[in-house]
Image 1 (tube, one colour):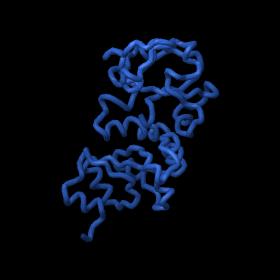
Image 2: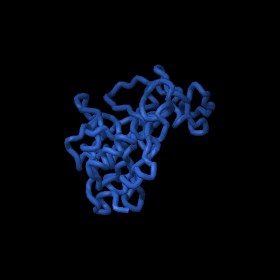
Image 3: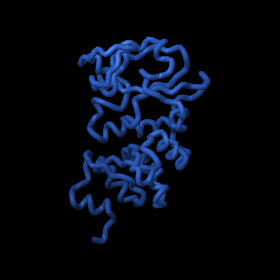
Image 4: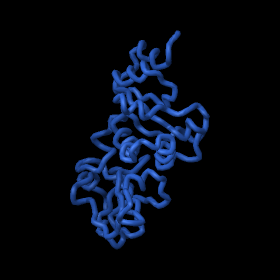
Length: 219
């Protein structure tokens, strides 16, 4: 049919909040309007687009017109790894005017919402699954959003950070609420309870050095 892919999907009744529109590099104004009206989430994969040399997705226009955007990794066919940190850095390199906070939201909260898992994942809130990562800040004056989006070389699960043994990480936060992978401290194998598998205000440990704690990317 003489139509754009988005226009065709609209006529077929496909566009809805449950639709994930991946890549979306070549969109006109009408396409963006249809995506916004259907409350469709666009999933952008900047490194994959660059590898295939297909162009750059119009992320600032999509955001400005109210289209939700999440960040994806494409596949190993178009990138050397499935690293969301590298995708965030690539997205900011393509669109320097984007705020690092918005980019981090695309990699966490927006993805959880797009998958229908907003009540479980995507942000550090009481009752959500506890899967946290930590990135040390070289200086207390460092800006955490900028640090996370700059593809930092040093990040680790909160419970496995090098200084965790000396901090108040007992019981340790389990990975995504999976009791078989939960750890409660050096040498402990106590199974996780339903309560322990969720983030509570008291389960976020205190640390003595500048760090950025965030919901685990790509989990």
